Amino acid sequence: VHEPHLQDSFTSLSVDTESLQRQIEELSTFSDSPAPSVTRVLYSEKDVSARRYIKNLMAHSGLAVKEDAVGNIFGRWDGYEPELAPVSTGSHIDAIPYSGKYDGVIGVLGAIEAINVLKRSGFKPKRSLEVILFTSEEPTRFGISCLGSRLLAGSQELAELLKTTVDGQNISFPDAARFAGYENAKDLSSVFLPKGSYSAFIELHIEQGPILEEEAIPIGVVTAIAAPASIKVDFEGNGGHAGAVLMPMRNDAGLAAAELALAVEKHVLDSGSIDTVGTVGILELHPGAINSIPSKAHLEIDTRDINEARRNNVIEKIHNSALNICKKRNVKLSEFKIVNQDPPALSDDSIVKATESACQELNLSYRKMISRAYHDSLFMARISPMGMIFIPCYKGYSHKPEEFAAPKDIANGVRVLALTLAKLSLS
Ligand code: GLV
Ligand code: MN
Ligand code: MN
Ligand code: MN
Image: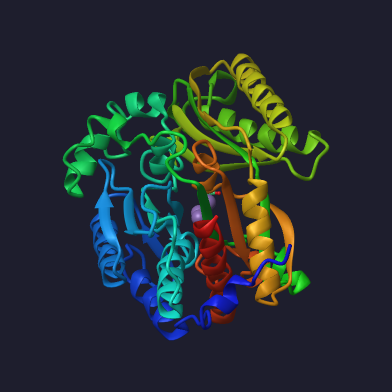
């Protein structure tokens, strides 16, 4: 059967690169750290300003804007069969401390531009198209990753947990949400979306790895997202004077933490697979004085794998190490909490195929790949067929100020996204 090329049916798919670049720069100024770094933490003043900026852009593109109780933001372009489940796309704009301008942002600004591209081309969607800005993909403030998409996907457990969750300043989640203008962040079941709410979800994102750049391939079509987990650990000892307490008398919580950090590395390496990774990104000592033996130590551990069982095995070994270290050093394991232990997600074949044919029609080469970073797509996959489009980024850098994606690569990603959305809208 000859399938007419969708692209021929509307004039062209030209991206307004100048406006898009200006928007990326403008958004990056809503930051709590100096340029070129970006720090934009959930429900901070900068986050609120950035949200307003995005809502304005959505409205300017003719989208009908809605927000839910935690501030997931939806901009909808009604299709000519609006009773059909819409096709959605989107990402996040929160940025971890001292990170870059592109992580998440490309999937939000790029999605709005993809809508503009389709509008300019004369395309009329059959299924409605929706751009989503997800609340707090990053775990920075409350230690919970993909908070907005996890809730959208119906996590009852998280809805319950958030009633009592506090940040590092002891501000509760509902209070923080209220500060940002979300008054109803108490009944979070209103955020849940039933399975089937969308016929498809697709996210555009920088690769956050070096493969596309190294291989000079403009597009990555994601087939799976690795399984992430995070763990909080607290050790407690007696502390004391750094001069007066002799070494045999100590039970140093800081050394227990140091030993556990090395154990994490060991267990990850022992998995035998290059796909297993583990990071101790937070290590805090109390009281944090040079002449005081640490009486408390707090660690946060991130571990991931494309193989869930292997990742779980690492978690178990980390737990055993924590227990053994406590025995050996006579410290107390006051907390060992698995914050999340998520399964991996597979992209849906129909979306992978739609993206591949979009690449072919646009004459862009592509390769299939897995995502080692997690994304809101991991959770959208629970309620919708899911897919992701990756674009190259400089040396694979991400989560640091040197993060960069070339305007041309971004434009290619937006075109692929636009054409894929168009295809999915008509299917
Ligand atoms: C989210 O940004 C991640 O750590 O993959
Ligand atoms: Mn990130
Ligand atoms: Mn991201
Ligand atoms: Mn991510």
